[in-house]
Length: 115
Length: 117
Image 1 (cartoon, rainbow over the protein chains, first blue to last red):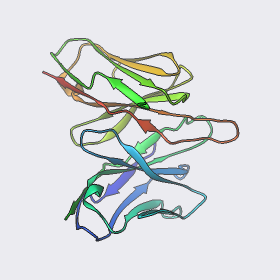
Image 2: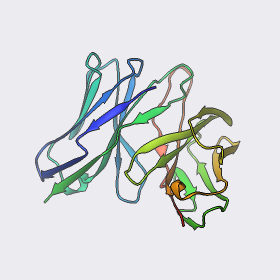
Image 3: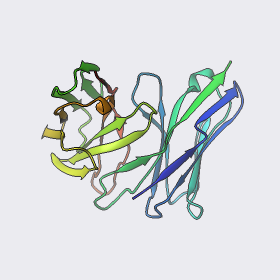
Image 4: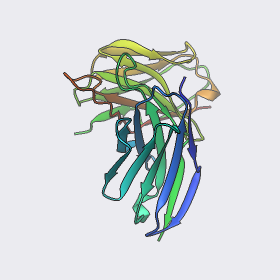
C-alpha cells in the first residue's frame, strides 16, 4: 500500500518568512496530492491540491510542487502570517478506477508563525 | 449551513460500553469516510462508503461497525470500547464521480473527541 512520509514534524518561522513542508510517497500509481490545514479543535480543511499531470500549482501565498520521478511533493507558504499557524498534512491517493478517493496521510507538520 | 456535521462533539465513556457517532453531509456527495486521528495527530482512514455500499474497510477491529442508512449519513458504532479507542474520529465526504470528471476533494467534519476511561 501507499506510504507517505512528511518532514519536518515541527516548523517555527518568523512572520513574513517562507515555510516549506516536504512529503515523499511510495506508490507510483498515486496521482492526486492534496494538502490540508487543521486548526486547533477543528477538522482538516483542503488548502491546495495537485494532480500528477502538472508540476506546480499556485494559489496566492500557497504553492505546491510535484516531482513524479523522485516521488516527492512540497508545500510552500510565502509571507507567513500568525493565522497560518496550524497542523499541515500532505496526502496521496489515486483518483480514478475503483479506489474511491482513498487517501494516505503524512504524519503532519506543526507550523508556528511568530509575530 | 454546515457541510459535514458530527454528533456528539465530545464523548466520555467507560471501558466496555457501546457507543455511536453520527455523521451527516448536506453537500449531495456520494462517498463518505471515517478517519481516526490518534494522540500524535496521525490521520488514518477506517472506512469508506459509496452510495451506501462499503468500499474501503481498513484493518479495523470488528468492534467497529459503520452503517450508512442513506447517501447523506454515515454512522459509526463501537462495541466494547477499549482504552486504545480514545482518539478523535473524523467523518468526511466527497463527490467521487460526476459525469466525466471526478472530484476528489474530501470535506471533513469537526470531529468527535472520544475518551474511554
